[in-house]
Every structure is written in structure tokens, then in C-alpha cells.
Image 1 (cartoon, chains in turn orange, cyan):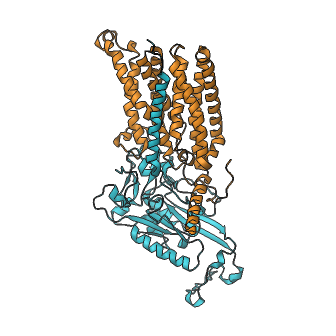
Image 2 (tube, each protein chain N blue to C red):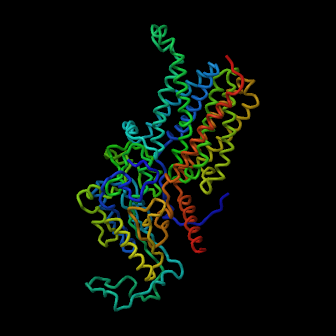
Image 3 (tube, rainbow over the protein chains, first blue to last red):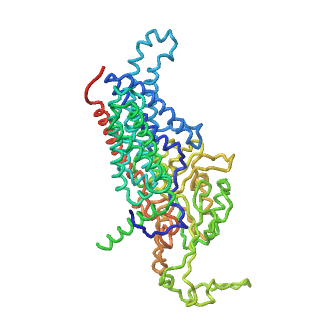
Length: 316
Length: 317
């Protein structure tokens, strides 16, 4: 554990402000990962001829996309002005970059899912040329969505790291890797939930691989964060992080042992990994919020940096 | 629009203004602040900033508690016993050189503590500081704003456009000083749901007037002007204070070499920044953004590699 350090503050008041974000944002972090991972899974299933896994993954991606769009709009102070995000494109703003990733990804993921539901088309169109073209349209849209999916999954790490929130910024080296792992485990887990065992192999491998990477990178991240990692073990963040470790670890173990034999085990382990991925995002979110509320995480490292620099100057 | 990760030292030029006026700023000299809060009041009045709570905080004379959506100037009060040996290092000027107090017939014409004699004085210090948005050279709030609502003015300051901001709240955790905030009340206020902070009275500047807080300050603790001139003036002042033995006198935010490229609003403090609730060594978060994008790109490719591995093996039809 990090030793207690003395520091001065203004009546214990926070220095940096915690984000005004609510559960919408950690939910979005999770849903973005789930959507992106599912689009990759869907494209792979399409190309390798796994129709059921393709179908369920496309639906998962579209559902997660819809929910995440709702969460993003709901979180705004002025939801009616959502489209103001489209006024500019700024590389210095991860939220702007993310908006454009989502804008490119969304229609393709939706189209890929729509191609799975020809029943929604009027019978005349379904039997005509459009009906015949539908699988091809689905494949094109699905591949397009899969191209945009990896940045969709990883940019959210930059989104929260690019702040003065101590626990988020301190994790900026590891967080993108943690989030892609978590996205893979969620998407794979969802694939295991819905696809038959015969087709679920890639979903299982993606889920277990993602889960193992998530646990390992999480450990590395804690070590690298320094002082603010303490907030991963406090308050709400601790509850979510514990749940994430348990669910992801148990889910991965069960999936590796029985996931290819028992449909029930596959479903249970898949659901556990989906829930584990969601818990992880909430845990990281709350660790950041908590770290912003306590001035120690802002003062102590900055004071040390100043004092070290001064000591170095005196040595010269 | 600012597209560079870290632009040139002159923010207006790097934001694209061809021939901007000289960069404007504040020099807040806390050594002569008397804690009257005229700046807080003038700011609220001029900018129509709504009331945001009328409660007693128990923090000395500070009941506005900190900068926020509806407190754009904030006076911090610190009642502080000095460390042993510190307070008496101050050399008293010779009696003849000191301006003599005028007896107006008031109950106490003498300086506080003057009648007691030096040896009886306590080491107590009362620090006051009028805090404000720093108008950073490299402003994180401006960098991360996804709508372009936050922009760089021709004066080198950073301002929110109320009609553009959609209240995403990203600027709030981005600010290394905890200045900007989304306004959450009172109901009916036109800026509810929108990020709010000091504009350095952009409207007044455009008409050649000084900001309301500086105008109202009765001691010239808040000085407004061309930033380069203010920096020179502040250096002279801090040198004089250090020379006369004032403990802890230091400039904060005046150096263009600091983590935000120098603040447009900087301070003369009499103690460590954290005593006043200021971050000791703030760094604009976007300084690490290029590295973060690289990590995210590698992570994205790792995900693709992982997916390929997951599908490696037999093809089924």
C-alpha cells in the first residue's frame, strides 16, 4: 500500500472538479466496448460462415449502439443540442474524435443488423432485388462496422484519461489495453450467451482471451498508477472492481473448462463475463470520481515533483 | 479553432488571429488583498451570475467555498498560525519611514497589534486570495471541448459561448485547477446545463474597459492589463517582498515554462499554492494526448489481432 503522506489543502476541499457525469458514462464505456467487440465477432462469423453467431453479434452490436447513443445524449446538460458535436472535428478532443468514430460506425452497425431482419421489409421488396442483395449489403456494412469497431472500443480510454482526474490520467498508459480486453470479453461473453456451441468457438476464445488480458492488465495498471490506485480499493469503486474481478475470473475459468461442452456452462460463463466487463467500467469510473474529490491525489504528486525538481537544482 | 496539441506561446496567434491585440490578463497580488469580496460581488453583478447558495461554511470568512459555475471570482481566507521562526523574520521598517496613522477619532486608530509591541504579537497570519480562471496558454478545457463552444478570444483569453455549449461536461474534469463547471441551477436560469466560468469580461474588454473585478478592487490587489507588462510588474513586486523578508512570497502561474504554458491570470502568493487550494504544479492533460492516442491505436490493433486469433483454425460452412 502507498504510505500516508502529509499534505496541505484548503480546508480539505477538492482541487480538481469531478466530472458531472452519471451512470450514463460508465454504461457507455461498457456498451461501446460491447458493440465494437460484437461487430468484430460478427464480421469474423460472416466470413467464416457461422450464421448464428453472426446474427446474434450483429443484433448485440446494434442494440448496444442504440443504448449507448441514448446514454450519451441523456448525459448532456442540453440534450437537444446533441448535434452541436458535429460542428467541429478536433484531434485534441477525444470526445470529438469519438463522436466521428460513432457517426461512421453507427449506420454501418445498424445496417448490418437490419440485413438480418428481412422480415421487416414489405413482402414485395423482400422477394425483389433488394431481398436478394440483402446478405451482400449486410456483409459490406458488417465489414465497415468491423473496421470502425477497434477505435470505438479503445478511444473511450483516451476519453477519460485526457482529464485532470487523478485516477483516470494516472492510468493513461494501460487503460486503452484494459478497455479493449474488457470489450473483447464482453462481446465474446454475449456471443456465448446466444450462439449454439457448434459456432461459439471464436466467441469463447475471444471472451476468455479478453478476460485473462483484462485481469493481467488491470494488475499492471494498478502498479503503474501510483497514489491514485488507492481509490480502486475504496468506496463504490472497490465494490465494482471486486465484482469485476470475481465475475470475469470465474466466467473465464468456467468457459475454459466447460464452455465448449455444456450450453448451460457457456451461457453462465458468458453472462458472468458480460457483467464483469460492465462492473469494470463502473469501477474505473467511480475510482476517478473519488480521486477528484480528494485533494491528496492532486497535491502530493505535484508537490513531490516540485520538491524533487528543487532538490535537483540545489544539487547542481 | 485550435488544432495543435501544444501551440505557440502566444495563444491568440496560434488560434489563428492574424493581428491580435496584446494578450490581456490579471495579476492578483494577494499580499495587498483585504478580503472585501468586492470582486466577487462586481463579477456577479456585471455578468448576471445567479445566487448559488447562502450558507455558512465555517471556513473563516469564505462562504462561497470555491470557483464554480456561479462563482467566477472567489476569495479564499486562510487563518494560519505561522511556523516557528517564520513570522518575525519580517524586518520592521524604521518608525520614521512608516506612514503615521491619522487619528480620525475612531475607536482604534492604531494598526492592529501595534499597541502591544512586537514581542507580544502572535504568529497568526490571515491570508486572502481572490482566485479566478487562469486563462491558460495551453487550456485543457478548450482543447477537449467537442463542440467548439469554448474558444480563444483575440485577447488570448478562453471563453464559453453559451449558445453553442451542449453541456457535455468534458471541460469540467479536464481543467487542472477545477475552475469550470456545469451550472445546475437555479431553475429557469438560461445557462443551466451549460459550462460556465470567468470570461475575463470579454464584453467589457471589447469596449476597451477593464474587467469588473479589477475595476471594483479597492487595493489594486487585482490588476488588469497587458500580460507581458503585468509579469514585469509582478516580478518587481515579488523581488521587493522577498528582499524585505516576507516569508513565502512567490509568483504562481507567471512562468511561460510551467505545465500550462503560463497562466493569463497569475498570482503573487504568500504561501504554498496548495494552502490556497491551488494545484502546486498543474500540467495540461493534453500534454500527454499524443502518447494516449498512440497507446489507443496500438490497443485497437491488438484487439484486431486478438479477434483474428479467435477465428484462426477450421472454417465451417
